[in-house]
Amino acid sequence: MIDLEGRLQQIDDATQHATSIFPSDTNLTCTFTAHVNAHTWSAWTEIADSAATKLSAAFAATPGHITSMVIETISDNNAIYMLEIAWGAAKVPITAARFAGVGKFQAAHVQDRFWAPEFPAGQLIYYRMKTETAVADTCTINFRYHAH
Image 1: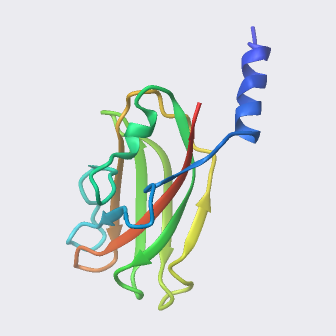
Image 2: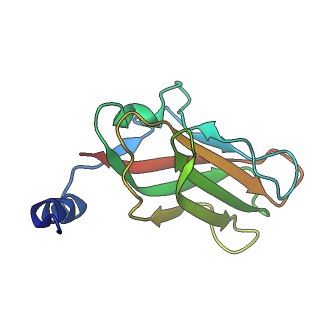
């Protein structure tokens, strides 16, 4: 049987919620680093800002969603980047992205909006990244998210 009340609550949560930003201040950054070898995924790394605050702290006591991410800067304007975001020990994927700098096809400032699956409370959130170059390229990112 369908839980109609629960489903309606999920729809309401999807359309109305207060969002937050990670990192939470203008003096903080969130940097992703690619593997040093071209076309090779980096190790899964927990997402944290420059003050070592983890994105998963926002979901420590309650489940929630990431609703968008903004690519702020990239280290190589001529490289193509790919990243994945996942949660939990099993690294359950929630989204993937592919982007590049102005040397390829657009400016580095890119906002991806998505309705990712809900993170259960208390789970860690990870990323991994790769580029087409044989250096450890980086990008800075911020996220919009909401907890339930």
